[in-house]
Length: 269
Ligand code: KIV
Image 1: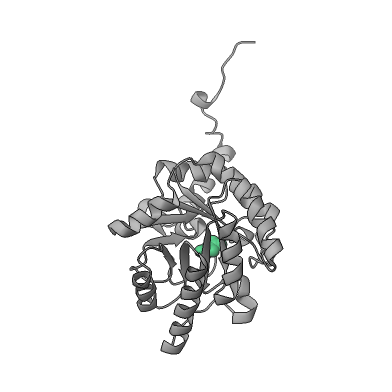
Image 2: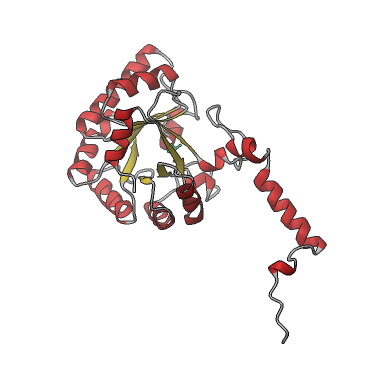
């Protein structure tokens, strides 16, 4: 099983690592077979799994349920789990929430924010809970940002974000995740912290790891997709491979070609 030390070694060796979101055991097993290095049980499950329009309604119980399912399906990847909206608003909440997801199989928790989380990072780390801090576009603050937009567009804003990174790293953050920031900033932050693996999503090619939401990269996000998404399913199997399989099943049931004899138990009774 990949550990935090492995991620640090990957960085030291210049070996990039892969990360996908995952929420269930069968997808987790597929990722184990594909040797995906890192899995994020993201609170994006609010949209991908629960059909909500933001991550805000997701609860710690949801994260625990999906983390346990993923861990059962995958014994290879390093697993980090989001602490959802308002579940780390106080130090006590942070400890209770982090305890629950760590006991369900996570190896690290991820929280969204900046310098103001320093004490939270310190307390969690002291209690044996490794922390990843998610900066840049932080979806739990979508209503503060007024939408999902590129962050740190000016030198001044980029320097503020770098100061946030320095503060949380100083407090003990072991991994940083940067979302939707200019590629130059992704590179600067990755180079600034030689011992801290930096994962990017829409943060350019220079970060140590890359993460995508699994539904996005499989072409299962219907409607608007972000500029940083690449649909790998389309490249491997065609535009709508999964929808096409559903359609073929529907037609085969209707025309009676499924189940065929090889899918049928023929026992004389
Ligand atoms: O919840 C999530 O899937 C995330 C990724 C977008 C990084 O935080």
